[in-house]
View (spheres, rainbow, N blue to C red):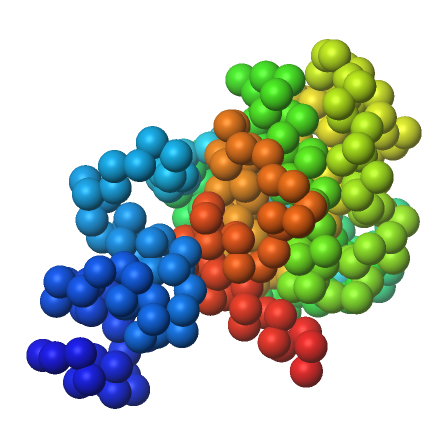
Amino acid sequence: MNTQVILGDATLTKTEKIRQLLALGLTRSEVAALTGGNYGFVQNVFAKYWPERVTSKKAFTFTTFNRKFGIEIEAHGVNPVQLAAALRNAGIECRTEGYNHTTRNHWKTVSDGSVQGTDTFELVSPILEGLQGLEQVKTVCRVLSQLRAKINKTCGLHIHFDAEGFGLDQMKNMVVNYAHYEGIIDSFMPTSRRADNNTYCKSITNLARLVRVTHTIRDLVGLQSSRFYKMNLQAYLRHQTIEFRQHSGTVEFEKISNWILFLHNLVEYSKKKQVTQEEASFESLSKFQQPEIINYLQTRINQLAA
């Protein structure tokens, strides 16, 4: 197969075309020129399929998703007792409880006063881990869809990442990086979750210039007056987690899993890297996001702009 055949094959994804062109022996620069000029995208494909040939010590290394995490899904339209029973029938241990913030060893449905609609609920996971945890989320999403759970603009999706091993520098980097990318993240969220449009997930852009004066994680957490920010640092004091609250409510596994993996990569990148406001563009996401996630995000941006 030659270059023109690969480029002209409409059945191939962009990622697969890049992989095949690289396999022919073309350089990354040559492949980038042939496929739209995005060298970072090509580099990500190269690193995915030929990781042993990535020698730059400065390059970001993608890691398997093995993080401990938790998830909170706000929705309505399903009786919480019925939902818990359906999840148990699907092999997911779930109980109906009153409002609480206690971490359980099982999924739970609790009340949530911020959600509007009939039969409102918040479905909260136990501590999940890695790809096995995502499989549980996939099952939960399937059950929610089968029961026709509904979402409106008062619903949110909250993700907790285990932060027990995070140091001050990584925490600072995460705040700065999220703040600098917040405008990009806004572009693949509904209007109700952008900028300062939502009382329950307020902007953190102002924190980027304040973190340098903090000397401890407690100082950093103290920059926020409540938990109602897109990145909630106060969860660290209660659960030793960082909570991401910006995503709109959804019961679709594709949206949830891509958001979780996007955040995972951002957190990993923030271990050593801090981006400037000038560096924070959609194109620069390819430095630490897989091509599949970049493609998904571009699709979401296009959908929401339509």
